[in-house]
Image (cartoon, rainbow, N blue to C red; front, side):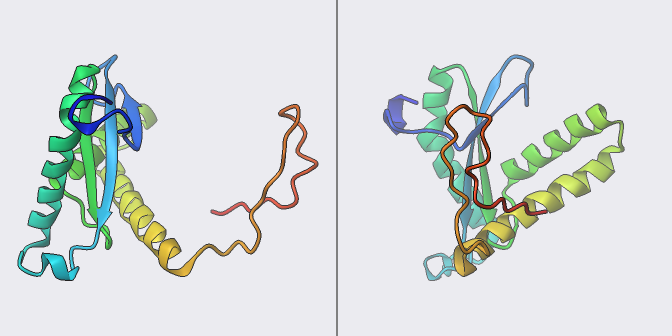
Length: 157
């Protein structure tokens, strides 16, 4: 993205057709500790999350619009609480999944919200505790099909 964010600015992920058919939405995820001492003057954790979302938008929205993309900040607290726009993303994702999988919208809302909250908490736990893997699975695939050099595959559920 160019513009106010500079040449090196990039979103964390993008979703094609999330809001409009044929449009790409750039998503930028931020996980923050709303209980940090620097936020003690703000009584409400939701206000801290909304302020962080506004700051992300101020930084990246113009650059996305220059590239004809929409932008959405996904701001979460370390315990899984979501900002307003992150909840809107979850509802839209649930709606698309419900129609695609022929499931009830309310059921998909619960699944998407819980999966997002668990993903945030799981990643924070990994940051604090570290991975359970003792040795990273590394290999050099020469032809793209040779997996015999792989020492260990760690499949997690």
